[in-house]
Image (cartoon, rainbow over the protein chains, first blue to last red):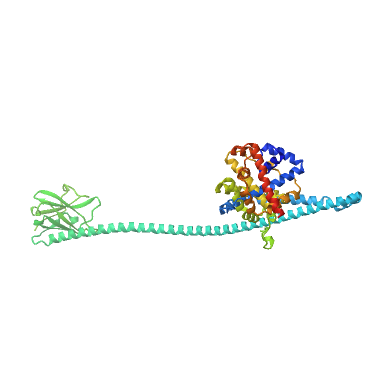
Amino acid sequence: MELDDQIALYALGALEPAEAAELARQAAASPDLRRRIAEDRAVVRALAETPDPVAPSPAVLTRLMTQIAAQETPLQQRLETAARERQRVRGESTAPSFSLLRGLLIGLGAVGAAALAIVSLNLVQTQNQLAAAREEAASARAKLKQVSDALADQESVGTALNARIDALTQSQRTLDAQIAEARKALETAQNELTTARGDARKSAQALRDVQANLDQVQRELAILGAPNARRATLAASKTQYSNGVVAVVFAPDQNSGVVTVANLPPLPADLCYQLWLIDGANPLPSVVITTDANGNGRVLVPSDLAFGNYEQFGVTVERAGGSPTPNPEGPIYLGKAG
Amino acid sequence: MATVISGNNGRAPDDDELILAIANRDRIAFQTLYERYAAQALGLAIRVMNDRASGEDVLQESFLKIWHNAGRFDAARGSVKTWVLTVVQRSAIDALRRRQARPTVAIDAPEYEEWDLADDEVNVHESAVANISQARIRGALGEMPQQLRSVLELAYFKGMTHKEIAEHLQEPLGTIHSRARQSINLLKKLVWSSVVD
């Protein structure tokens, strides 16, 4: 391959890697070859401008800047690097002192003038580097301030958030207290409801009791007011009961009667007065007669048998609750229907 | 934040100022440079990759390299614009080679090292090319015989070596070498005639 062709292909980037490396080695030793390559390369590079421009989508720049931000060296590390660079540049600029330079110049005479020019050039370069380092440090400080400002903004946001959290916490506490209060009120209401239901049950029971009493009174009135009602007044058969009064009123067609007592002597709790319907010599157990503290009472006497069959009535003292057979001691009150 | 933009009293910074600022991690300067050359760079990347999505990927990758390597830019070796487009062209060729499972050639591989050419040597050629309008270069390329233009385009826009071009065009290697030389000479003729004009 001729050298001209190699140069052209090299400028186009069309040589194989080994061939390109070989030509590069030759060019390193040949200014003429380097010049010819530079000529060809300059025109080849102009080809880059031949395609029509195409506007990129905005997303490319966004992705690019995001990528750059992600790859940026941490600020602190950059500050340290800048500080080291500044220190290094300062060291270089102060190492060759002016007195030393002056001594060298005196000793070197005419050659020293040239050396002075070189040293001066170096000094200018060093000063430029120092200025660049100062700019870098200033830039780093500016960025540090940016970061500080951003941090302050974040702290401000954090304070606002904390205040919001405190407010929410306080609201939560208030809400909890209201809930507790509401629960307590609910519990009280439930208790009141329970009490009210109990009261209602009691009232209903009382109503039922009253109704029952009313029914009994009406039945008693019906008996006592019946046109054919008959009455039996019982006389005490024992002295200790002589103050007591026992009367039985019954309506033969209604098969029921009313026994009314007054001033009966009080009995121990395990004893009671019991009414007996007597047909000849056969006593039929009837109701237990309850009395108040004064020995007074009135009891409705139902009967499956017609009262008309029983002309005589008796009262005995029996065990509490009554007995199917009469007390052997006999009746304490006894009487016939009139 | 002080940037090269805000420090110029309203004057638009030139490319050299921008690249210096970018080397000092000035993101605003970087965005300014991007906005200045992104469209041209994307046109080039799409010309190589043949699709917009891949072209935008190359654009992103290239400007990331520019951000990281701005400190290595040497104005004595060429203009910022040339450097930017060179980075894009080489990134695109690498991406194309990766996509085609062909060996890639790193940008800073030894064979692509710039030598220490005397500043005036480089600048003479670069300046001459820079003075030619884009339309004129495009026109010259359009007027170039197809068989010469193909070699230029396959090498520059498709990253093919001379052996790959020969295989692709089914032409002898010597023919490809000759056409490469002729095509560059035609371009150079345009450059120098432009300088003379």
